[in-house]
Structures are given as structure tokens and as C-alpha cells.
Length: 419
Image (cartoon, rainbow, N blue to C red; front, top):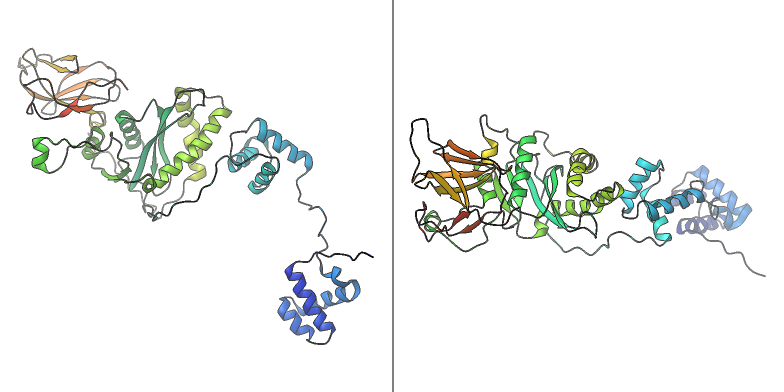
């Protein structure tokens, strides 16, 4: 004759043991109720069940029965179909959100995860053991520090060429301040990020960044003037930050700017899936989607309140020409024919009202982010031109001997391929 096997939890085993001692007059029911953590009245009920039904009376009545909250088989089948056909590139959490927002199906993330794994749908990203890094605390106020970077990736699918997503995030709130696609990471991308950010929010106190060549001088060439100053001239982006009074903070490892690295991980997961859902395959359409929909939705989902509510963004000074401040800058000497020459381009300087010429004058030449040129003599605008292709500036020795610096010194030269 086979014996009945009763599955009991450790809690139920303890109750069985204590109540058997009560029935054997080894302890009182009051002592047993105290050790079981139940009232004396409940202990009497349990004793009665044990006496009448045996050990089975202590087992929960719903054990072995299907849960009343169990997912209906048809609904589970529908979720798996959506996961395999419509939302194939979505992770568990993202897919759960879309079930609620679009499909009208409200289930928990754990339910979705269990269903997917049971049906052979693996996790989107493998989890690896993390290296130990010391945590850097968040800034206390919004605008105290911004992190920015570029992420080269195949954002529009494996059949499309890689491009770069430029993004800036507030350190205190994790708010995505700005993001857009460009062909590759370059000075123009950072200057465009800076322009959009200061026009919308104001001037941040500092920017945390890596040592990309657009942001940090990584060469060992020092001009005589730099040696006398004891520091190298900044990059084009660095000069703009200096003009706005923004402190650059350089990270030594990718982990040091972990918040924006995690942002790109989220964007490579969610943004790509959202664009695939909408059949977005080009940068222009991707930029419209970022501006019109995604950034706001992302911030609603992931932004957090800062420790201090008062914002640290500085207002733009009154009268500041932001298009001139955030632009590419070059030094030049006007030729005898009152023309400035840069990389094969000639900018003619018109005659001043006083009929004065500018031959041999040292001038500042700015290319704005729309590609147009402005020439300044002692902060006075003396010439301007229509837009030309934007080019990544490089440091090189100027060809003209009459240049303002010594012929052996290097400076920013307009002579690279177009952005």
C-alpha cells in the first residue's frame, strides 16, 4: 500500500512539530502559538485541523490548484505572438510597456519575462559581471554638470552604414538635454550640441567629457606662445567652452562617465526598436523623431528629481552673439589685395566707409555652424560670405610667411574634408 506524500513548507513543518508536542502534552498551546507567531485563537483552529485531518490539515488549501490570477492561455499565446512578430527587438521591460501603451494588455514585467524564456525567447543583452569602480556622486542641481559624447553605431539597421548619435545628459537629473544623428563624431557635432543646449536651457557650469580629439589636445606640439603660457591652446570646442565660462572636466576611462555610457546602452536598445517600429531608416527622419517624440518620452520615463530644486543653468548674457561665440575660429592676415585666404577660399573685404583698407591687418575669421563666414577686425564685422561646406579644423603650419605667428608655429587651419 502506497503512502500519501504531503509536500510541506518549512513553516508548515514547524507548526506540525509544535502542535504534535501540544497534543503530547509536552508544551502548552499558548507557548506553541507564541512560537508559531499566531494568535491563541488561530492556534486552536490549527490544533483542531491536525487532530481531525492530520498533517494535510496544516497545508494551504490552494496548494496544487491553478492560481486564480494565472494568465489565460489565449492571452499568453497573444503575448508570445506579438513578441515574435511585432516586437522582436524589444527587451522585456520595453516590450511590457508597449503591451500597455499600444496593445492594451496590462501584465507585469516578470510575467512577460517568464513567458518569453519558457518559449525560447532569450534576453536581448547578456549580463556580465561588473568590474569594481568607485561611484561618483551626482551633482546636486540641474545645470551644474552636463555629460556629452558621441556614439558610432548602426542605428538604422545592419543593412545601413554606421552613423553617430550625439547626445548631452544632465548629471543631476539624467535628463536627455539634446540628441541628434550626424555622419560621424566631430567638432561640429559638439558645437551643435552646445548651441542647442544653451539656447534651450542656458549655460551649464561644467561639462564632463572624454579625450576625443575634438575636445582635448592630444598632440605634443607646443608653440612658443604656448610654452610661455605653460599650457596648450584648447581645441575649437574647448575655445567655445572657455568663451562661455564652462569648465571642462576630462574623464580618463569610459566608466568615469558611466551615466552617459548607460544612456547610450538604453538608446541602442530602445531608440533602435522604436525607429524599427516606425520604419525609420534615414538620419533626417531619425532626427525629427528624436526632436518631436522620443526625447520628451524618454525624459518622462527616466529623468529624476535633483537633490536641490534650484537650477544652476546661467542665462545667456544680454547682447551676446551666440552664433559668433559658438563657431569655428581662425586667425589670418589680410593680403595686399584686401582679401583673406583660407584653404583655397578667398574672402574679399569691402572698402570701409572711411575709404580705409585692411592690408596686413590681423583679423579673426569665424565660420558659423550654418557654414557662413564672418571676418572681424578688433571685434568689428568687416566682411561676410555665403555658406560653404563645414570642415573639421586641424592644426598645421600655415603656408604664408606673413602669418601673424612665426612660420614654425602651428595653428588651426581650414583644409580638411567636409563634415
